[in-house]
Image (cartoon, rainbow, N blue to C red; front, side, top):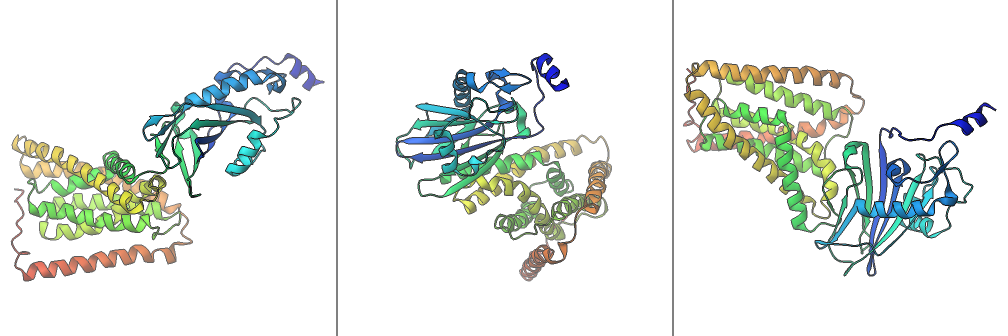
Amino acid sequence: MLLCLFAAFAPPAIAHDLAGEMRVHAFVKPEGDRLHVLVRIPLALLLNVDLPKQGPGYLALGQIEPGIARAIEATDKGIDLFEDGRWLSMAQGTGRISLPSDRSFDSFDSARTLLLGPKLPDNSYVFWNQGYFDAYLEYPVQSVQSSFVFDFHIAPGLGDRLKVDLRYIAPGGVVRAYEFSAGSDPIALDPRWQQAAWTFVKSGFAHILDGPDHLLFLLCLVIPFRRLDWNLVGVITAFTVGHTITLLFAAYRFVPAGDWFVPLVEFLIAASILYMAVENLIKPDMRRRWLVTGIFGLVHGFGFSFLLQSQLQFAGSHLLLSLLAFNIGIELGQLLVLVIAMPALILLYRTRVAPEKIITAVLCLLIGHTAWHWLTERADALKEADWSTAADALTVPVLLAVFLLAVAAAVRVVLKRQGRGTTLNTPRLD
């Protein structure tokens, strides 16, 4: 009786909170003269469509068809598709409501069979925010071999709270899977080499500028040596070689997979910044800095790789090219930082607001203080990590470190024999 009274007198739902995380599933397949797009959207995203309801919030499936037409139109507006840069206009679309328990979107064929089959009976109970709206959209194309771009902009303000699982079935049958958040950039579904290269150059450039720990490490490298000569170029090059090696290993998955590895790398990155700040205070030495920087480059390369792993899904068949492009983006970001930092440092030291030694000490103490806080925070995360798989996995980074040390030692011997290793001078700080 209480349930009946609640159903009879419950007020209509006007505003609702969205779930913490939602997922949209989509398939895209070029076939014949059409691009077939299957999309599964949680009903909670369709509040503005105003699907008819009855009782305490169940969808009125017997009166749903006008709402389905509005949902198809809204879905088409929320997805833009391009063929070789040309925007595609939807030719036709169909849609339906599906139960929360439905698993038809596990494959393209089962999803299309569902959408072309019978609808849910009118007496089915689907709550307003607990089922799915499924849409089958078709777009005319000129060739299945064209380059297609998928731009999803439904609820972009949700950001990471809304994930999109997209699978592209290429004409040859190869399936490319993508996962991205709402508001992401357009996705080249089977990218040409130019598209992949440009995507990863931008990604590497943005990553180095968004990473304060990498920027502070780079700043520590140049504070004692405020002129861009071949010695400093060699130090930067050693850092580049180090992180390039570990990026290559990470791209081909020759890295530990345990939960302990990410916090370990983040801890070591903070430790590298702290070490460089302390060395700047004690005795900066250009003659050995390139060796130390190369070793730390290995660690920072693993840090870069954590973002790269999530981005490699957009490489298509151009894995190595995308990796090199990502590295180029990082180097361009580093160059921009140097172009800005070097004149600023020179100007700061020339103002004579304090002796050079004091300015260097203040800068390094500020950087070291920040690095120390990062170190302690990441040490706490490191203590909570699961180390059960660390014994075997540690062999990979150990071998990498030994390899770089061997190369660095060989180069140093060659430089000494040629008489070039003894002419590197360090500017006085007093």
